[in-house]
Length: 324
Ligand SMILES: Cc1cc2nc3c(=O)[nH]c(=O)nc-3n(C[C@H](O)[C@H](O)[C@H](O)COP(=O)(O)O)c2cc1C
Image (tube, rainbow, N blue to C red):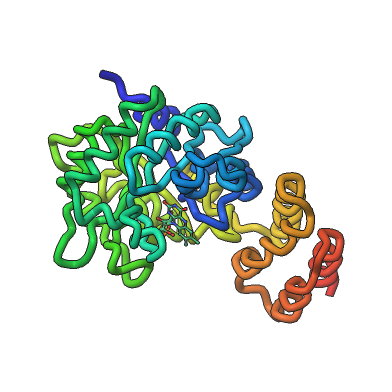
């Protein structure tokens, strides 16, 4: 049988995903990253409980722009009925694939048996995953971690079990649940999962890719089919452009101040269209540190940005820096 995700990835010279990040990768940021060269985009995680109850906020999280394709809707949950119902609803939104989040380490999620908690019960993980695969026509992918803690890292087996469940790609964050986001991602086990001769589905490597050079090095060293970038893209969507440049053999370029401001403005306007100006301006506050990292004496500008309430105020504040 063919693999639709493999076909999708084969269209890109060096496939790069923007990692799903709750509270960060809304449509505005995803569109900015797409323009900069991110190939595959995924929604923020969406609670299957909330989605199956048609809670407005969760339904809205599935919305995407045609320019975002290939695009996946990510769901998380712990019980079969709501996961299946959510997957069916996600399918109606028309994405290219559905992704199941079996990696979230957050207590609120894990305590209910969702996210990475499932790594303590691989047979259940396989059962729930197969139920979702059977419920929809779209390809289903999974995003997970190496295992629960340092004494349990079953990812090589998990990848095979996911393949047997009918999953068409697996994204692996090279940490255990116990590690949360601390320490260093261990890519050697991602490489082992990929090197398993019984595994045929694409493996997407994730964790700590923070430069174009590292993306190229790690893909080559660990043989993964694609890389996924999360935190390093926050306020730095240029990382995708830099990867593309390096793949082409040209020099990676870094954004000027004016380019950074223009990109912030673009993101703000896109976000305002989606959720209103006030919310767009407030949510953008978490991204300034990334966008203007390393700029001399930027702190006072950032303090002012933290108080701005309109897009034009933000623009004036940012322009005042470039003029000084
Ligand atoms: C703020 C934040 C929100 C996140 N939200 C999600 C999410 O909604 N779904 C998901 O699968 N992973 C989520 N993650 C995990 C990332 O997708 C990624 O696996 C992790 O950050 C490691 O990749 P990185 O080192 O490139 O950041 C989140 C991470 C961060 C920092």
